[in-house]
Amino acid sequence: MMLSFRSAAGLFVGLSLLLTAQALRAAGPIFTPAAPSVAAKSFYLMDFDSGRVLAEKDADKRVSPASLTKIMTVYVVFRELKSGHLTLDEKVTVSQNAWETGGSKMFIEVNKQVSVQDLLQGDIIQSGNDASVALAEHVAGSEQTFATMMNEQATRLGMVNSHFENSTGLPISNHYSSAHDLALLAQALIKEFPDYYRWFSQKEFTFNNITQKNRNQLLWRDETVDGIKTGFTDDAGYCMVASAKRDDMRLISVVMGAASPNARANESQSLLNYGFRFFETHRLYEAGTALTEARVRKGETSKLSVGVAEDVYVTAPRKHFNELKAESQVDKTIIAPVNKGDTVGSLNVALAGETILSRPLVAMDSVPEGGFFRRLYDAVVVMLEK
Image 1 (tube, rainbow, N blue to C red):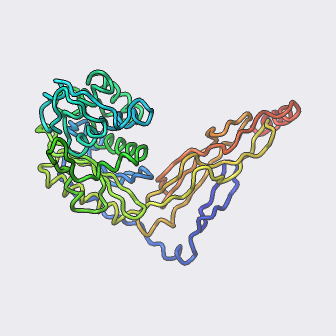
Image 2: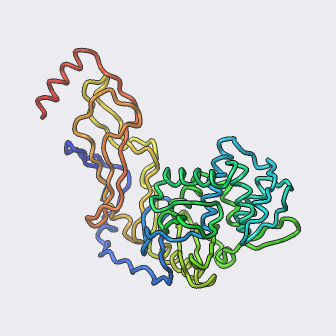
Image 3: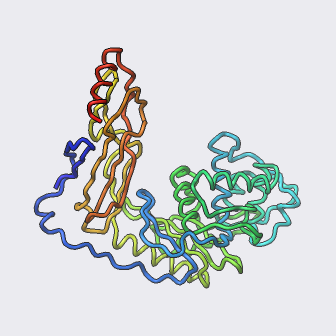
């Protein structure tokens, strides 16, 4: 079988992804075992590249995120580093407020200067609440203002069930997130900051002659796990966002409200193993590659190359990937001017008749308006086509 593309005009364009006749004959009914039972208030398992949800329970329920809050804290700091507003070797003067912050600590000292990099490692690896507050105050002047920055990023990322009141995750009213939202945040952090993400796999960190181990037990159990963060409060229970990469496939799991440190690690491992065992992810199409051509009216040229703006990854049950059917629906009437990147249709990928992925089709080039006679001629054609 060839993954075929059908435009709105009824044209079929064959692409290069083939399924042999032998494989097609061998294709059987699709059966994927149910996700494992997870002893937690809520959970979420998604593929990093495709974004496909592989398992979930109460994933949009608003719950206390505890120290998983710090994923957003460091995400905001990473954005400040990327924008040039901060440097890793920049010194931060520790305030009395940061030093006095309760809970887990990096053990920074009041009025001492600590580098941004050390504070980030203390925040990520040691889960230091004092480090979180010191970073927040340095970036925004106050933790309250920093929380506003956190909420701005939550909105931008589509974290609709999240609101942050502090940088630490210490209990406070109106501070919440969800398993789904935290997966979106982890996905953005890994994608946008691969160089900084390496700190999440670091097993221990020493500061002020005090060595503390990363609380993510999976870093010792599973060499494919390279992050990301744990959390605990009496209200939240034991929580974990984990990520692992096996071959070319990366998964993100979120477990909220488990009963113990071992339970959150065991449940996270169970979800990851399930995803890797029963699903596979591959890139179907590369960003910027023309997939088909569309007809343009009233333009300098009548043809327009159409493709996808970002790489298209698809996650499917194992042994059924080659049964995918991709269909493009190009807008019937495209009128110049057309700018490069304009949406001119949609790409839909289906398996066994069910759409499992949709992406916009965009113009690969710009098409300016044509001359007077071209516009006049096409105006008549468009009118007759209605």
